[in-house]
Length: 318
Image (cartoon, rainbow, N blue to C red; front, side, top):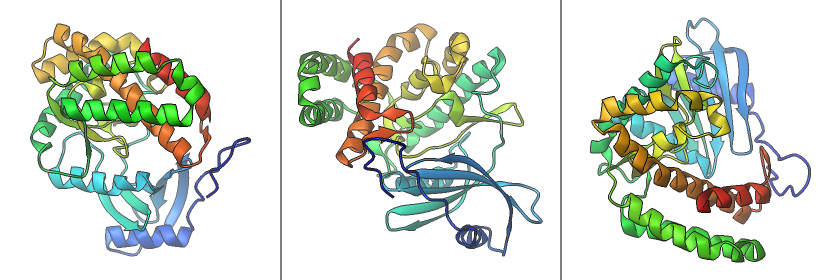
């Protein structure tokens, strides 16, 4: 895969051969299968996701192929399965080979919260997210699968590392914002270090919430961004004005009220803590963009990296 595309389209991961996918799915289901129909849901530079209709099977399945660093998703999904974390998509099987992995999951359905939004669904999603986090509170000491941002030192290290990389990769641009970034980093570390910490999805937006039978929220795409972090991190991304949430912002209050019901936190407590968690999400997205640049990748699926970095930095320091 050639990702060094300073101009033109970003190269995407090649779709696997039918025989390769059938062999993998057969091994997961422990019986011979053949694929009847494939619907490609996503084909990007690090991942492929497709819905598979199998001959003679009543239920479709979700097939994924991911490459480094996203191949960690196989271990993430195995952990969720082993711990029986509620409201998370269920993995059927996985196979890792070097710096790539194939993953087979149950198909939770075709409707996402991005497509279908009501106040009642927003309230329920907040409640279900709080219940998932409650269940995850006891999992934080049981695993080394996830990155950890769960104390003052780790927050400071994360902030300092990203500021250092930004200066190294974009010195002219970074010089204008380094002082402000350092100030924000200090307050961010202080604000978040007293939080409760638990397993976070890490990329939780409306498009990553499937409504099973249009009624039950299921969180999909636990992957590279999943981590042990501040409890309200996922809630911050889900209640943001990010494009991946569509028009969900009009039900922001309902999501927060649902989360309060499920967590025991007051709405006022949640509102006070959300801004710092949102800034952290932008810092970690900046980290991913800088990682891409270090890998020689100058494009993303939504355009060149540099304008995105400028936008994200502005969101952090505003």
